[in-house]
Amino acid sequence: MNLPNLIEAKSRNRKDYNRIDYKIDDSIINKYKGKTFFIKTYGCQMNEHDTENIKALLIDLGFSEVDNYLNADLVLLNTCSIRENAHNKAFGMLGRLKHLKEEKKDLLIGLCGCMAQEVGVVEEILKDYKFVNFVFGTHNLYQLPEILDKAIEENKQQIEVFSREGDLVEGLPVVRANSYKAYVNIIYGCDKFCTYCIVPYTRGRERSRKKEDILNEIDKLIEDGYKEVTLLGQNVNAYGKDLYDDYNLGNLLEDIALKDIPRIRFMTSHPWDFTDKMIEVIGKYPNIMPAVHLPVQSGSSRVLKLMGRRYTRESYLELFHKIKDTVLGVSISTDIIVGFPGETEEDFNDTLSLVEECKYDNAFTFIFSEREGTPACKLKDNTTLKEKEDRLQRLNEVVNKYFLENNKKLENTTLKVLVEGISDKKGMYYGYSETNKLINFSGDRELNIGDIVEVEITDAKTWSLDGRLI
Ligand code: 5AD
Ligand code: SF4
Image (cartoon, rainbow, N blue to C red):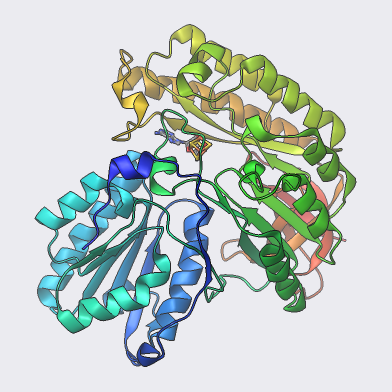
């Protein structure tokens, strides 16, 4: 048994780590042929991509996927720790699984992802959730086949979580959710330690993949006909810092842009690491999509300092306008937290005025959620939940106003759209524009998923646009 440990999770060890190639033990390939699994994924794109690897590992063991957990021999929860409601959802699901297991004694239940890295969660599982067969963390996902095999063979709860990041594993098998767009990890972990955030503890220190490994993966995706890649990392702008002296996200984006791939996206960008070179490269290459996710979190320099964000309102705005002025037609989206401990009405008004200035194309807004073990938990917080909810509502009214206003400007223009499917409700095609807007459109000819087509925009809504195929 290996339990998570907060002290170890906090430590940042500059020593190099091993880069190894994944290899499954031959003796367990297809050992569980005929068994089925269901995996429920919570949280961000990183987790979605981990799920694509987990599915492939289970398939190597002989499992096949079913789309209803009631029909599965194994149910695995790939969890998220970012806010309390993600945590509660996973525990709610564990409650349902407990009842299911009372009727279906052989049901296997596993938990992985960020919550598995939390000391409190694992203690609770050991104490009150003995029916969970196995737990593994974000650093040892590649060990799933052996851990699961042991849980079945020994019929004993297995908890294997490393708090220090182990090896950086290349060559994990993958079953991608789509055949036209793909996630590609470029950097794992985060060293920023924003005071509210649990990610640096659950995902470990920043570790970049080697550029050759990333470029090879993208070559393979191009060969397989992929049209879009999204480069993933908790902070992609830190790419390369731990590995190279003079190769960063700007260089990587440029190397990828020179390949024959129509669409390149990347997320998430911390404003602190955004270099001029990156902005220049994003503006220069038409296959780097003009869409930047630039989380601001707060418009008050005082709160930003308490959050440990390493920039001020002014320096954020300077960067924001530099990107807007250099990358033609760029859309910028953001994340905002309201109700951070000590946020006053004046601080909140600073956030509203920043939003009025930035007129974001999209924004994800949250009420601060206390995460055990993070420094923000120790800060004094006098604001009531009612006030926080009220601030969130006021903020949402302002951000929504600008989503619609920006979308209205696109009426009667032509946008390039990557076709993703036909929507059940409307019987119309849908897809995303280069600036990441959801477009529903009618068409008089048959299109394939993955086609990139031109659509004339006829009607703007707050969260989507309607159009017609040209
Ligand atoms: N409470 C509320 N929101 C949070 N986020 C991260 N941690 C917390 C927290 N403790 C938000 C940030 C981040 C996004 C992914 O989630 O806005 O950018
Ligand atoms: Fe969390 Fe800050 Fe790292 Fe983003 S940059 S993952 S908010 S610590």
